[in-house]
Length: 452
Image (tube, rainbow, N blue to C red; front, side, top):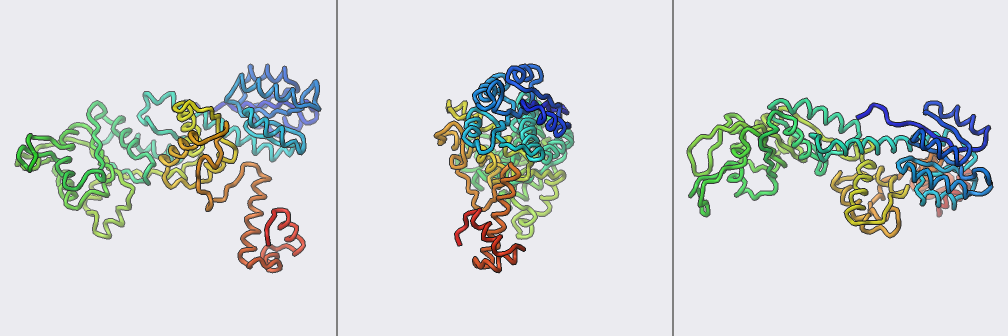
């Protein structure tokens, strides 16, 4: 992956004084400034900017927005990946919304506060970078040992580095993480990166097979070992000889089989059910569980000696909510996938939907995100997926917007609401808690349209 993603910022602004101010404010970007449509298109062709700020009021008729909309349309036709932030006049909300519908990333209303605008630009650059990194990851997936894993978060990349270091050994690995975090993907990566990569990778889910069948599935059986055993059948452990055996949901392994598995790990031999032959097996064991094995050991449901055999290398997978930036990244990937699968006319997410995705806890992790996006594509009635289409329960989550002014208002409203609730809507006591006068609190209540 490249160390540096394109960070060219193109500013389309006809006000010469404002041009100088913006050039100074965004000096940490490779900033290009132009003043009209023709120069803007030439700059897009030449520099392929990651982010563009576009004043809709451009010459020859700066009082009209038609030239700005035409410029926006042409920029996106040349570079659909660019994040275009339209700059509109004060109270020009309708044209800002129209620009978003045309494909603009965000909007900002004059007068310009360079500090606030920089926050929006930095955010746009970050999203652009995530998307570019993901494209690089997708292009390399055919040869990547981490096929099926899409991430750009530092937390998950650290896990990948641990997998790379562990893979070349024969140490037994234990993958710990919530359901839907990608434990099987990493188990396969451990095999693909190992010296056993040309041999079999055998996976078995200990929770999906009834207890009375699991032993024969793992260890195999001889003809006549039980009713219905009409021929010799080798078990999964023996079948994985010289390769890798992945025992998923090892926490669900019955105690009776835990003892037998422990014996195999100690002696590396198996005996088929109904047989007496000791069969040596050379296999690398990888296990995974979403359960707390420490608590299971305390309650007597998991053998402590088996745990120490299985946990030579422990790899903990972070939940999706702990993976910085991955929810937004994955949501866009899943959206593209389901748009293609369902021949949908959906073009993207609304700004509110993306905020909800980034703030939701995702208890079901990547699997839940995948399902929610699939549902949204099917249910969406407009060109952009909104929060209702996603069907997210965000009642317990404070959804923080990306705009600094909006974020301050959300925090202010939440703090006032807590003070009023704490005091039973007593204005005097709430004002005292907030450190403001009663008239000021009344003004804030009116501003935020509280009912008291």
